[in-house]
Image (tube, rainbow, N blue to C red; front, side, top):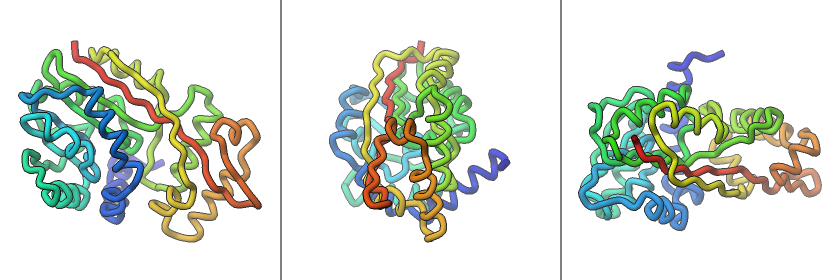
Length: 260
């Protein structure tokens, strides 16, 4: 069992290697999904926004035109530099860049009007602590927007999906369920005002090769999917033709909270 610090080192190593691929990733750069983030968050021109685990900088870029300032934070220096290069090339200049651990944010209490985190929290060893830190740095009445892949409460389905992601990506820790996220948010005074689930279809080869670089690793992932029982394959809509996996689905959850 890896320690939390070892898991974070794996995240840094993995995302240092794949930083540019996350800027161009169709899932992360999806303009419709990013516009929905803006629409749900409803940012105001006076706001200062913290984007945790900014990755390629897509949320920071989407939100920047509507707010006073965005702080793009990431644990991985190479990822943060890549995001900065991407945003500056797009003439986005009201963003600053800070290396930061989502579970130990280097900011004072009540520093931000809004906090966002999109498709990243499954890499955090202690997501409950991430929620605590997000709530801490928010003003009362501030907004917290989370988007991440989730798993069902059904243990068999959840364990299958998390093992699948861990086989593909050694930096994956765990996708949580909606019930877990809801409990953590409520404990920190974050009231959910909007929530939505979305089915995402992954084209298998593109999804696999973004993170699984060796042939051996790719074969292990394929074997895990093909050996799943009928219940799992039906739930995740696994499409296998002539022994080859073509696609499957995951569930993404978006939640907007207001800090009481």
